[in-house]
Amino acid sequence: MVTTAERLTYATAQAARVAFYGAHYLVARVIARDAFAEIDLERHSFPSLAATLRGMRLLFEKDLANAEAGLYPLPIDFAQELRRARGSLQYLADIPRVAARRRRNGRNELREAAGGLPRYYRQNFHYQTDGYLSANSARLYDFQVEALFSGTADAMRRRAWVPVARFLEGRDHKRTVLLDIGAGTGGFLSFMKTAAPDLKLIALDLSEPYLERAKKRLAKWHNVRFLAAAAEKIPVDAASVDAAISIYLFHELPPSVRIRAAREIARVLKPRGIFVLAETIQYGDLPDCDGLIATFPGLLHEPYYESFARQDLATLFAPAGLKLIETDIAYLTKISVFRKERKSIGTQGRRSTRARVGKNKARQE
Image (tube, rainbow, N blue to C red; front, side, top):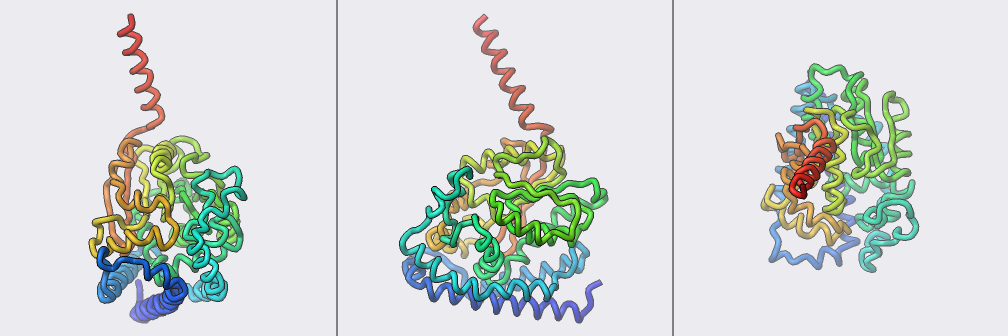
């Protein structure tokens, strides 16, 4: 039961977060004002300040309601907030470097330095220093994301837990495996462990420095396995995962890689297992925000964002045997829930191939 005092504490904490991270976002805008000056305001629609604040308010109201419903603990952790806030000076010091990198189009500084990783991954996403490939980048990442979304990122991520919590009802958590694809620094993994301590987790990410930070973050928890691997090559047995989740990853994958990742997710899921995709809103989800979607890739290097923003998600995942069953808009994030409809897409593919070979042979005979 959430008390009135706890509700007030929650509201105060979220307002403070928005003010704190929103101020950092404004500083970043001032330093990178030349980039924002290039935006054609006549061509693009943007939400008003009133609409933006209303969207934030609705996000936090739903977040509090979910906690009151017992879907997860009330998200108030002042110690954690203070630890993250200490990244302010490092974030502010890095903004001029990011702005300079954008002006010189320094998007491929890691192309030669990160051999062995997929080519699409070896670049400076967001024009950020070191891309995703250093301990310094890992230390900055959570602060950068919160500043980008003015303190709403954690609340948007928590909405992705809601369909998982419902899926887990009546299940033995100690025998249930959840795969986090693109787990990053482990922020959401830590939240999941707080909500369901006995759940078995697999954290998968291509960045070893980010996974190292995740390991430290989750050191006190048991039943967490860490894998340095790509979403399109998941080193996990077929039909061994009850549920999978991916947050803010698919818009950073090339279109062909998204297809392969969808197949891999279907392969590792058990029949009737679910996959929860928490991603950026797409064109048409919130028409007033279409301008944000159109201008975002240029402001912060996101080479595959535009194609993702136009991607039909049901069509992307259906051929792999994943059926879209639910969607939810959480401010600037869309949560899409898919259910595995077939036993093994890989097996079906082999059967289809054998069938075609058999038919061709019959024709030849």
